[in-house]
Picture: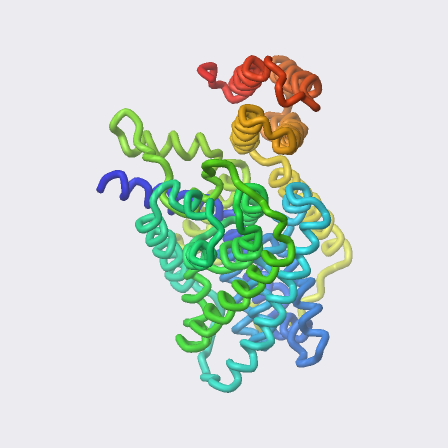
Length: 478
């Protein structure tokens, strides 16, 4: 019972940490809609009732650094602005799956061809869902007033989302999903849809899971399922829509989205399937269920801290997100009112040109830095990816699979190419020992770039890779 409780707590803490930067961004964007630009002006931009609404909403949602949890405050403000349901649905999904956090990362991991295929399929699904749901909403419309987002509403939606995560962790044991997807079957496909619906997957992790689906699952069509369902909605989305449009409309939104995404995934799977065969075992999907037992030395708290530190869940973006949310909460508790214009004067507010240019320049620099942090992910994440690729390479060499050995070797080279910049971004410089270790790794990878299947020194080569990677991570036991 203690192990299950600690597993649930671990996954919920990870979700809170991963969503904190985008939730902070969503709150700031929602405040800007209300107090800086004005709801009427924003509604006039993206919800004029013309065919141009969807393209403009598409662009609006694309530049927002949000996720399926961070987008919730923005949805409340858009609903208060009385935008049409199709626009709100498009922002809810587009802002969660395609944003500055995921675009470059997905392009790198999947390659242009596969990435833009997913973009096209996801675009068709999201637009179709938005238009169809708007038709159904007008047929069964009810009047639900909204005063914008509140701390209570966001807290309630977040609690519902965490409840969904807890349910997944409780009923999906460690390793179950990976074992389930080793066989190509309809049951596996449907089970993955059921697991992804209440789960929360942050944007960067979504792209990582998609890459693992492509190379480690017999059902490549699950890429679109994880991208759209896993990354696009949580039970918090359903709770938010329930508060805005009622239970019937919220449930129909989730059901339509799951069905259309599932059909798109099945079609994509049939179209691109080339006989992918995973290894004998894969843990690519374990983040949807229970983790390994996180306790250490009999202490649950030490185990949780060790697990979070090992998985790199606490980075610069998470620290900014948590700090910002705590500051807003303290200001709220203290009753401090920020000097923002009223909603009545917001629509008449005219920003000086120098202010607009300065904000745009600063925002671009911040977005570029955040994008760099997500592209050059935390060194612990990169080293974890390296170890997975290294294990796959070792298994391929052991089985004599030259093609898979070449693919996994290329994966190791790709990870190492991003490691120096990741270290520089987080510690300001690259230490001499780290630079030497990276150079040694590159030299070893170059020496074995096209190994013969029967080459006898692959075991010692693998041991050298482990020792050098362990020196970068500070773990000398590897």
